[in-house]
Length: 462
Image 1 (cartoon, rainbow, N blue to C red):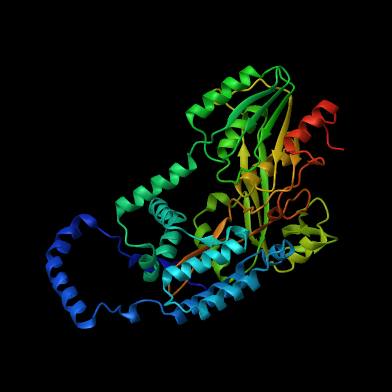
Image 2 (cartoon, rainbow, N blue to C red):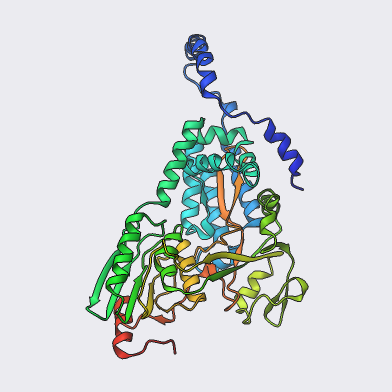
């Protein structure tokens, strides 16, 4: 069974952060001695690497086996990926064979590249990927500032294995702060929205290519545009090609100005009782008492007449689930339900809009992750008509989100979504992607289809 919180705190107390200020003098004094030692070492051993201190090929193969075993017990999307033409288990076996048969002197970098190639061939289903150094350091920075809640667990998870620190590199407080600034700058990268008039006095459009947080310049531009199109009949919001990210800018600039009451997005997700999942939830949530009135975890469920029944015989889904979703759920043990997003109408300091016409949303197969969150909320709140093609998916529960597997020998951290989200209204698996109200007409793209529907007067789903 996984370690208790008491054990984690004990191990965490032994982890000493690097104190660059006090150690510089000591390092300088030791420099000459170390230099001499290195010279002697090089002379005697001819630059040979001490193989006992680095992972061997056998260590890396053992790490790969450890990863696949952990995924088998915790990863939720093997069957869903297989239906989409991606056999993750088979791809894993092929990757392992390539590592075993590689004629080169396999090192950690080659191993990491092979892992990333495996995840890419798996289409990063469930955000399956290697945690990169910027976000590794940024999350340690955040963990240090949230030690009273989730930070203690993440700090332990990311630093208790010395091989992890060796793989990602030594760091000090300045490194953490700079990495955090880079990560935050990605969230606040320019949205680069374009605001256009398609038909004067009647149809306007917004091109929204990135799901980042809004800047003041975005707020000013959107407010002026909404004032300009106040009397228009249609506003087409085009997010085709948007790969995702944090959707808060979309909520602030597009959703909030066009609602008159708060809207809520409810998350219903299922997960397996694997050791990594349960340990991660225990570490993340043990001090999040304020979430418990509105979020429920580790509750078993039943399937009755194609619907999901939770605690106290509560009906969790309104529509019968598709057969393939029912089949997928046989592998899961618990569910989580809660409110993941609450969007309030723009206040007096927010972006205002007097536009009262019809909203359209254009989507395509390149939309994923945070873009799918925005689409799901738009559809769940029935804000307008969605046109295009089915999206990619890669949809994670915003509260359960990523789990992490630390590979013992190499220290590489692999991240993945631990939950299988289901729409409580339609019963569909959200990882499969969102389906529009209207698919593209033959020979037309989403914009052309929407304009055809507008000019034909077909503005409601039939």
